[in-house]
Every structure is written in C-alpha cells, then in structure tokens.
Length: 259
Image 1 (cartoon, rainbow, N blue to C red):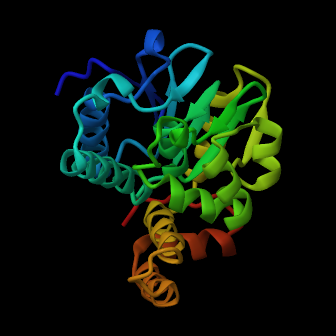
Image 2: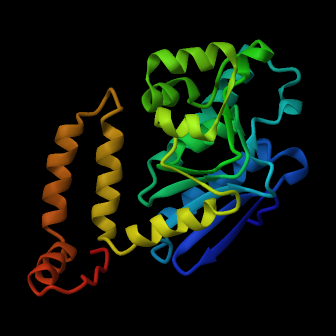
C-alpha cells in the first residue's frame, strides 16, 4: 500500500510514523485510519522493527481530532460503524506486540488524543495541549477515549475533562498520569527513541508478553493474573530466557533473538 497521509521513517530498529496532514492540524480522516490500519497490521510480524513512535507533522499538532468534514450526513448506524472501526484500529495499536510511544508535539485533541492514549506510552513537548472536546459538538468520544482516560487519570478528573471539554497543559497531564515524560519542544521524538532503544535490548518475546499481560488488567473478559502465569511459562521455554540467564551469570549483555 502506498501511504499518502502518513510517512514511515525507520532509524536503526525504530519506526517513526508521522501523520502527514500538517495543513489540517493532522486531523484523522478515513484515509489516515486506513493507512494506520494497514501499517500496524503489517508491522506486527516485521522482526526488523523493535518499536514504533507516532507523531504529527509540523510543530502545532500531534493530531487535532477527527476530520469533522467527514461527519456530515452521519446517522446513528453509520456513526456507530465509524466509532467501531476507529476503536478496532486503536485496539490493534494498543495490543501490538511491540512498544508504541506517542510523541506529542502540540495539540492532542479528540480522536488525536484517543490515538495517543491507545499507545503504550506518551512523551510530550512542553507546549502540548490535551483534551476531549467532543461535547462542544454535541457528541461524545467514539474511539475509546472515555474508557482510556479514566484508566490513566481516574474517574473524577476524567469525568470533569470529558464533560467540560476543557484542555489541559502538558505539566498537568504529567501530574495526572496521562504522560510519561514532558520535554522541551522538539525533543519528544528523541526522548521516545531513547526509551525504545533501551527496550529493544530486552528479550522481544518477553516484551510482547509483558504488553499483553498489562493490557489484560483492563480487559473485563480476561484474567490478567492468569495471563501472567501463562506468559511466565511461555517465556521460560524460550532460547532467550536461557541466553538471558546465562548472560546474567557471566556478567555480560544478553544477545536476544526473539525465540
């Protein structure tokens, strides 16, 4: 698939996915969703990619929401289908077997903030702004924002932000637990790269199992404790575990192969 709304730049073993609609504040239209869906389906089995950074083109916005121009003529059925498709794509990102970090470089609003929250971590510039302003349009979040925001910052504050549509600054988002790091403007990708490079030195099979184990804590249909038991057993049966234990005893860096 030829991507026209996102760009992919691979540095060493880290892929940087940039939403490339700067003139539209990187708003998420159906083409962006289609391309994200395709990329995150394809990258799952790409062993040359150890981690992924998602960011927005320019320095004004990570993604300033969904493309409202596409909302004209929606009825209950088509709107529900649109919401379900967006959720499915964001679940694909959240459940990817590789770590994904949102490098937030400006406004992260509406669907854009829902995308950031679907990533495993978030690193933001000091000038970033976050919000779910859907109620200002007489609608609610559609891509999982009401659920993930509560997970990250708790019911009370999430309810306030979701009902008022207010934006918060990066320092408050960090204090509330929405962000992992706040850095000077322009350094968000570099910081994300630093984190992912560190993770890439760990056992890839173990990293994938750790992601699924943490995610299952929030899945009402899963038992996260059982996922941990199963994952622990699976990891113990890998060559990576043998290599990791041997490297520890020999006081050297492990050479993991993902098997």
